[in-house]
Image (cartoon, rainbow, N blue to C red; front, side, top):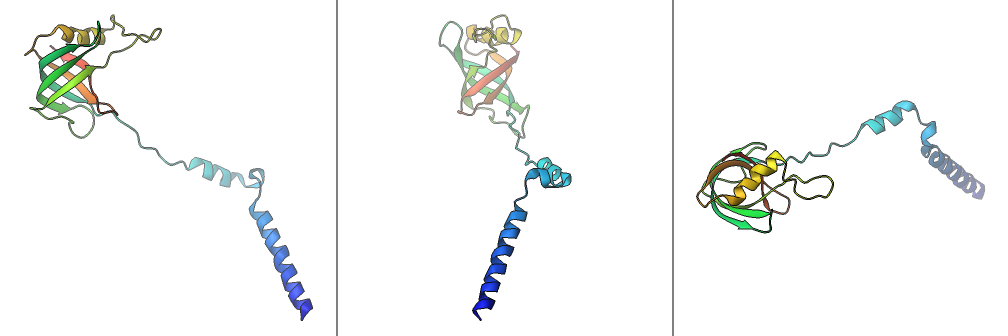
Length: 152
């Protein structure tokens, strides 16, 4: 009887070791189709798209922060989504925006020769009540950005 138990235990131990060795084959010994199938399946990551809204707005206040940077307090007259499914801001809301300037590659300072920056900087000297059309968005920190001035 002890011999039968010894035989069963030995066979189970040997069979168990054999199956664990065969399941741990190195990648070089696996068939090519198994390797390509596992490499080809990658989960898709969601794309982050900036939700941009075209607004027609009245300037209520211009606040200079330094010789280039400023903020605008706006009253939204009209809004239409440019990208995304819906507009993030609705007419008759008030919002404070910061111009999103293009920077020069060398020093990281605002490129005052850039055409888009010139349009943004033109609002720095705008008067209260000035109506313009532009594109705005909200960043990850909840700060409203003025991306572009389309019509003054």
